[in-house]
View 1 (cartoon, rainbow, N blue to C red):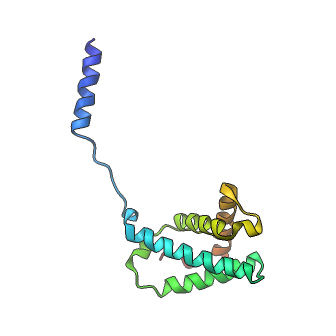
View 2: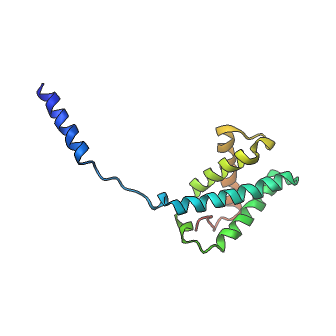
View 3: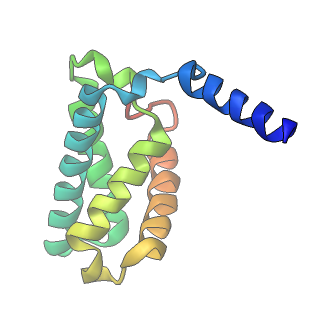
Length: 133
C-alpha cells in the first residue's frame, strides 16, 4: 500500500512539474517551407526531364545542378538549418509521389531506393557543396 501511494505521489509531482525538453531550430516553420519549396522544385525538374526522355542519370544530374544553382543564389537565411538527410528524404518522397510510378518506384522501398540514389549522385556531382549551406 505504501508503494502505491509513493508511486501515485511521484506521478502527481511529475504531472505538476514536467521536465523541460530541448527543441531544435529545425522545427521552425520557415525551414519546413523552404525545404518544401526545394523538394517541389527538384521533383518538378526531375519528373519533367524523365518525361522528356532523359535517362534517370541525366535527369538526376540536371535536376541537382539546376536546384543547387537556385539555392546557391538564395538569400534565405533558413537554408543553413536544413539537414541534407532530411532534405533527401523529402525530395525522395516528392519524386516517388509525383512520377515514381513511371519508372517503377512506389512505396517505402521506392523512396528508400531513390534517396540512396539521390545521395550517391549528389556526392559525385557536388562533393564540396551542400544543398543547405
